[in-house]
Structures are given as structure tokens and as C-alpha cells.
Image (tube, rainbow over all chains, first blue to last red; front, side, top):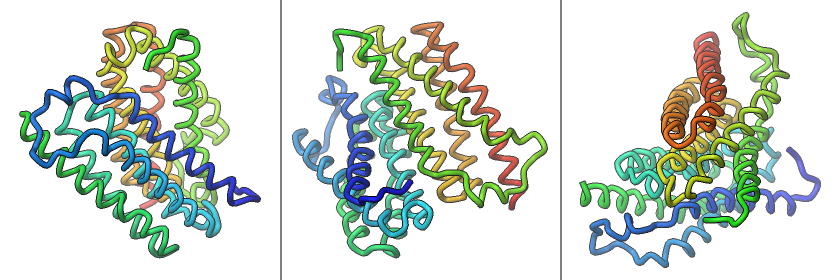
Length: 156
Length: 156
């Protein structure tokens, strides 16, 4: 897929990552989440919305920066990794908030972490800014994985 | 999320599954796929488009039928499974056609098969027609998994 105007393509990447984000919104953290035993360092609920909005925006810009270097034909591998991590990202929320399976969600977030790390590495060989734009995302998912693990173990 | 008019919600489910489908369209089977050694029973390329269009439409209707019985609040588990299988579905194309990793793609399609089977089972307890609408999808992914495995082994 090629666009004459790269600005339009940026819109496409933003749309794609926000569509993924909105899947997460289908499952609201409800009574189940409220009733979970939580660690002292569990962040307040209002933090997650703004943080994820920023992370999804940055990842869309990162993918666009890589895509600009020749589209899917030239950047098959880094963009392929990006879409794999996006699919894994989309699957986490239904596992945790939909199915209430924190154990399986933890296994899945470890795969997500690996996919993001691989994407960041592949992006760094194409565009340094694109790789940096993924760094906060990797950091946050590292934290989210630890939080997921802790919530799982505290509520067995 | 609740809608006054269930017809609008059907549009939402169709949009969601077609958005997933269109991710697959980002990676066109190109020279790499053309050059793969293929089994004699490899279907002609033109079959995949119509088949997947029908399967995505049926899965959207199935999810809608289940969703109609009380929305996400009441159908948390079947709809959660549905979204997990949709995320795994979205990740397969970039693994196979983007990264050209048929081995990892095969491991992933096995997980997808399990997620679809679990969704079908969960749907069958809410709506028989919804479960039947997923049956061709499960059958096709069974075939696709065998094809994926064969293409992987033939081209090591």
C-alpha cells in the first residue's frame, strides 16, 4: 500500500493503533478488578487512560517513520513485527479484563514484551527516533507485566 | 457498551472483524510466497479472498448474536474469547507474509485454532446459531494450519 501523501499515511497508522486501543475500552475494569487484592504500589486507575493514549500515539508515529522508508515492500520485517506486537497488545485486555484470567494474561504479556523489544530493535536499524518512540512503551509494558504478575499471585 | 438499536451494534461487529481482515491485506503474498514449494493440494490464490470475506462476516454476526444477550456485562467470557481469537487472527498474517516465519506462524495458528474452538464452545452455550456460524471458520483454520505446516516443512 502506497500513499502519495505521507501525511495521510500517518493518519492511517494513528487510526490503526487507536482502533486497537478502543478494543481495550470494550472491557471496563469493573467489580472484579475493584475487588482484587492490589500491591501498595498499584497506580491509581485514572493514570492508565492518558498513559496508553500517549503510548499508542507514539507507536503510530514510530511505525509511520519506518513505513516512510519505502513502505511495506522495503520494511517488511520491522512492520511485520510491529503488527504482531499490535495483535498481541489487542489480545491482552480481553484475557485480563474480559476472561479474568490473570495467569494466561501474564504469559501473553511476556510474549508481547518480547515482540515489542524485537520491534524496537528492528526499528532502530531504520530510524533512531522511531526506536526511541517505542522506548516508553517497552518500559510501561515491563511495569504492566510486573503488575499483572503481582495481581495474579496476590489473588490465587 | 450498550446500544439502543442492536442493528447499529451489528455494524460495529462487522467493522471490527473487517478491520482485522484489512490488516491481512497490508502484506500481499509476493515473490516470496510465489517461490515457495507447495503441495499438490495447495488451493489457487483467488480462493482466499472470498473465503475470508465470508468467514469474517459470519464471525461478526456470531459475535453480535451473543452480544445481544446482555452485552459485554452478561457475555464477558464468550466475547472475551472472541476478541482473543481475533487478536491472534490479526497476528498470523504479519508472521507469515510479513516476517516470512512459517514455523512461528504455525505455532501461532495452533493457538488460534484453540482460541476459536474455545469461542465456539462458549458461544454454543448462549446461541446455537452463533456456534454454527463459527464452524466453517474452525474448519478453514484447521485446513490453513495443515497448509501452513506443510509449507513450512517443504521449504526448510
